[in-house]
Length: 127
Image 1 (spheres, rainbow, N blue to C red):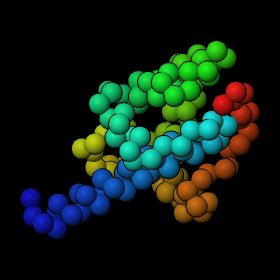
Image 2 (image 1 turned 180 degrees about the horizontal axis):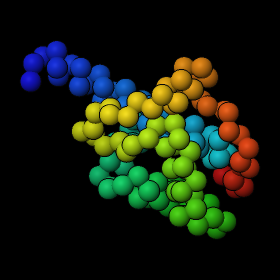
Image 3 (image 1 turned 90 degrees about the vertical axis):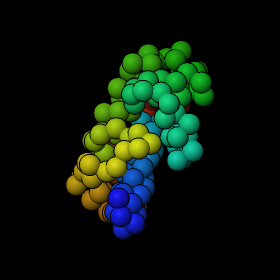
Image 4 (image 1 turned 120 degrees about the vertical axis):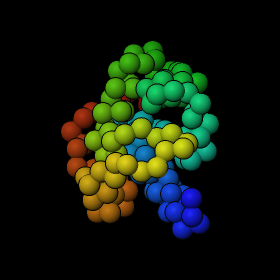
């Protein structure tokens, strides 16, 4: 692999990471959840296979009080539905961007990283 090719892959990986984090954080905000993920959080969950399993582990560890009102399946499904509407595909540490998602990129550019166009869902209580 050439030096320029390696640099391009790193840039694509960084952009994919940024898009996934922005989509997760936007989904959390839209649902009224007081979560905020950064790259460190996402990398700490990377060993867990599957986005739903990563979300479940995070919620069970850091926000277990939500499970008194909502099932883990409901929470994960609601979050992933929102996240995937903005940034389809799953992030993994070795993944390079394959799905830029025109809607997610356009919304991010237009709204500084947050797509507030679908706020018709009620916030989750107790978040």
